[in-house]
Image 1 (spheres, helix red, strand yellow):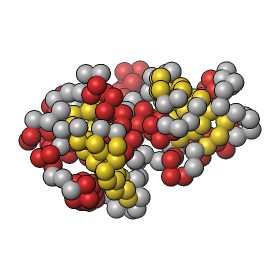
Image 2: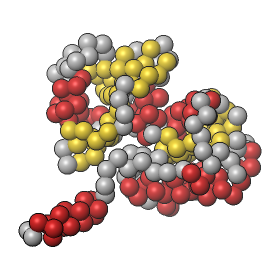
Image 3: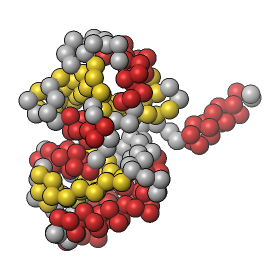
Image 4: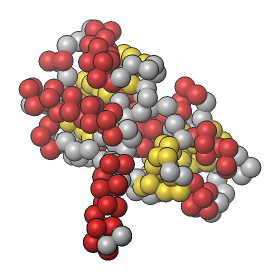
Length: 237
């Protein structure tokens, strides 16, 4: 099964073509260019490098959050368009679950973390045992202090992945069982999105393009400010 996958949930953007879980091509950019400028070009390059066209694709996969609100919207909208035009099944992959796939050879607990600002991270924990992945928590927004307290309950090795890994390592690095993934395995990549999507497909968790949804985990800054304003008006403050 040929899978075309994309990730635009953070500063880096990536596209890949995989045959089941085997990568055929992977294109990655980590520049100041916007995803609206680069994502279609990355997809085109990934398809060309794999020697296929979009008509050959059996499954479309995209990281649907959490992450940059704009980046998530761009990636999901693009995949929805490609899927609708060709009636191809789509997989909306948790960014955090895809990040955990970066640690495929690890044994222990994978702590996927993305910087959510405001002293919070987007996080999920996974146990990896001989290549078998088991989710331990849902995707959530959590303070770094709460996350540290939770991790202290584990005696097994813990590896940090994601763009919030360095932030957390600076706070958790004194814990002897905590390590940080090397830089190439730390950031989002489209191959890991495809691998997670492959198992979603096997479990019957894929959807039609029009059913593909984003997963922001929390309201945007503008929405939070609006809710705050409404509460102030109701209380007369």
